[in-house]
Image 1 (cartoon, rainbow, N blue to C red):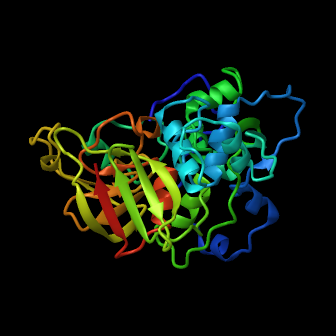
Image 2: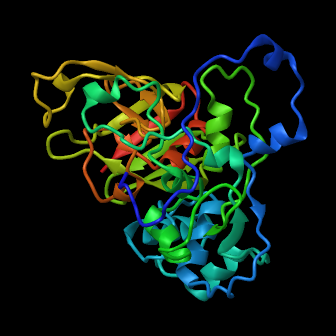
Amino acid sequence: MKLITILPCLLLVAGCNAAPDKEADQAPASKADVDADSLRFEDAKTDAAPFTEPPTLRAQVLLDHLGFSPGVIDGKEGQSYVAALRGFQKARGLEESGKLDAATEQALLQGRSIPATRMVVIPAGFAKGPFVPAFPKDAADQAKLPALGYRNLTEALAERFHTTPETLVALNSPSTLVGAGRPFRVPNIPDVDVPTTGEDPRGWNDTLERLGVAPDQLAAAKIVVDKSEGVLKVYDEGKKLVAQFPATMGSRHDPLPIGTWKIQGVSRNPDFHYNPKLFWDVSNDKDAVMLKPGPNSPVGVAWIDLSKPHYGIHGTSEPHTIGRAESHGCVRLTNWDAARVAQMVKPGTPAIFQN
């Protein structure tokens, strides 16, 4: 992800890896402690000037809500936005124009009035990180980190609200300060109920909450990765298109493996075995290393393993490149979309890759 410096963070507190003492571990949490760890974004009470919402921005937010992801929410009419509109229109039996016509807008609203943005208060639990300000480029140096976390609060906020740091600047201003307790305008991606997915040794519940992704998603009967459209489609048991996500898939050196495969399993917050010999654009003189989990991992927050060896569907540390860059043969999604798909599939789910 791109490091942005024009939004200074007031609070960039590195996490402490030291174990708590026994007395602290046994003491019940006070309300102040709970609030300090909260990831909930409450509405801000502010006298900020009214915000004029661009129709494209509102449509992107609504598409995201309904499972037809436009990728990053940025108010721009790019190819991922057009593809999301086409997918939604197909699912609703509308003309597949890829344009925000009156019928499509009415279907998106579903009789609701949902604003495109919210003014929120940045919670202390979210603002304290931990962050990795001096994030190294080299994999060998990344392997020394305890986790591949966000560089700063702005980057974390961008992922939580399915957007980019640049869009956050545009929604606020270059002079807006970012920190715990500060009011801040964001795309209207709501909080989710605190996820509880059973045993959670790798912190997946926390990841879902930090990405604004609910653990309960529609079950996928099959997924289709369509190279010509640049999307991953999710179908239910009735063969109905129920969700769609923009994807980066393959390259001239590592083409998308066309065929019918199956989901082997899902690794949430995975370690990543970085083997330079598998990458045509990396010197074989580099050593293989094991990278710890984190949103800035080369595979993002999730790895969905395929029956095709060495291939998978995964997240990315650069969501703004989805659909605009090549991959090493795998299917890359934004972290929030990868997390959503990870909750939709299971071992045995068919994965059809087509041109």
